[in-house]
Amino acid sequence: MSSLVDRYCASPHTGPLTAAAYDPTSGALVTADDLGTVAITAPDDDFPSLIFGMGAPVLGAAAVSIGGDLVAVGDDDGTVAVYKTFDGSCAFEDLKEGPAGRARAMRALAFNPSGTILAALAADGIIRIYDLERWDRLANYQGFGGRTIEFHPEGDRLLVVDENGQPKLLDLLEQAQIDLEDLPMDIHTARFIQNGRGIAALGDRGITLFDTMEGRIQQSFSASSSSGILTLAVSPDDHAVAAVTGRSVHTFRLPGLEPKGSEKHGAKKPTYASFWDHRGVVVGGEDGVLHRPGSKPTLGPVLCCTGFGDHRVAVHGDRMAVWTKGRQRVPFLVKQPFVEVRIDRDGRLVAALSDDGEGVQAFEARTGRHLFGAGPDTADTPKMEVGGRILACMRSRGGLRWFDLAENSAFELDWVNTFALSGSGTWLAVVTPRGQVRVLDPSTGEDAISAPRPLAEVPVRLVTFVNRRPDLIVLDEQGVLGIYDLSVSVNQGIPAEGRDVLDLKIDVDRLWGITGGQYAALRFQVPENGTASVIYVDLTTGEVVNEVSDLLPYAWVDAETGRILQPARGAAILEIDMWGKEHQVLRALPDGEWVSFAPHGVLEASARAKVQP
Image 1 (tube, rainbow, N blue to C red):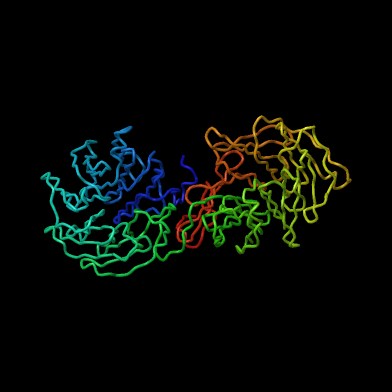
Image 2 (cartoon, helix red, strand yellow; image 1 turned 90 degrees about the horizontal axis):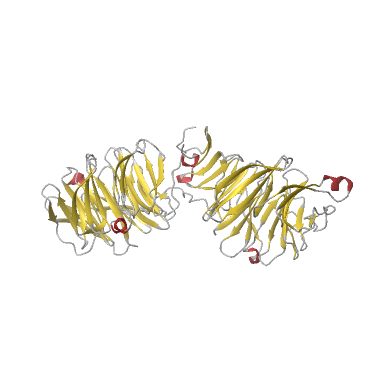
């Protein structure tokens, strides 16, 4: 069964987009990235129906057959494969392993008009011709380069670029090469236009049009003042071409190559992956996202996320999106990258740890307004929490700093080893240098209740409150998990007596006390494979009731629901329940749209999102 994450996944790539091919007759699309992830969108679909990994980077080698029935992909290990778009089954495969495969790293692919022949250009300069029905190689042609190959609409000739950067035609019936008029510049891209009657050849500094029959130059356009032309796209109606540069898309009418207009494409670091569909030119970026001129900004991959109760936060590069009850608010600009983020239980305050040394920053969750910075000495904080009107974080050099937003006051304690803030912000538990626990009033810094009695003569290493209960969970340096009921201290003014829950043999790095008081969640790292696991402990019986493994190292647990949150492909937050089942996905879509969905279907979606509820 496919993952819930792959539904409505318009932007499945986490690496730079390095290949894209589109069939205008059917709408079928294939995209790939430099991590080897391939996404295939079948005809008439709005989202990829198949997402998989090739095992090696895919650099330019992708093609879709006319009609959209087949997709071809080639990777840097020399593998070329053809898949059926409707069910993902393999219709053809040719591979070479080891050095022989890497020597023929694939760079461009093309189907003939009937979808029975595949041409493959490799880094070794050889064009290989495959008969897909017979799973057989028909011919090899040596001495070629560039970034494209393309069949003539009649299927008998192949448009290529030779190793000297000149466009050529290969007559496959006569096994002969046809020269075109020499160009004064090298080109890297060549495309048939006007139903094969013409050829558009593209170099870094200009476009040249050829007459296919005569092989003579008809028109030229120089782009000497541009930021360099990356690639060329042909309109579905064959009436225009577009040159994609580092900043813009420049369109030209055919057959005269008259300038038609220019637009900024919005990709900060565009790649060679580009195509022209019924809505216009699409440009791939190093952020793994397809960009359209004039569209709303498309949010990039989720770098980090968090959540508490009804509220979720996702950081997408320099933008932050807050979700409430499965609905995304308008993302706000944060102007700097963040590597960790927290939100309070009521969804009013966001704390985020910057990646540029400026430390913890505080934002108003509803508006995105920047409130203050906690200072550069929180740049490497091992822990930060928000609750009620309080933001607290460990300093990089040791000690605790916290802020009371209602009183506009700040506090510091140099001796604190670690801490926990209750969900309401009413209590602040701190661990002393001797490993004992005190519970403070964060509005004054004084003891709020009597300090709980130690469970053993072993220092406490981690602490957390149980959400919405006066319970405190502790983990000592020997791995013993314990719990206190602090209500006795509140009601009678005496120190709380705790009890041991479980003796653990793992190196836990984070605790959560789940609403209701029955379960605690504990996260630990698995260095062997770079993942994390979360175990759930029944605080009454002292038993581990489940373990969820193969998580991201920074996976977070919502203390209200017990669900695990982590970034997922396609600009999404994935939620997993305590039994390891995918619960729901919150996803940012292109053009500023969004959707939240569960295994049974769509929960909420923006007005123009193309999803079926």
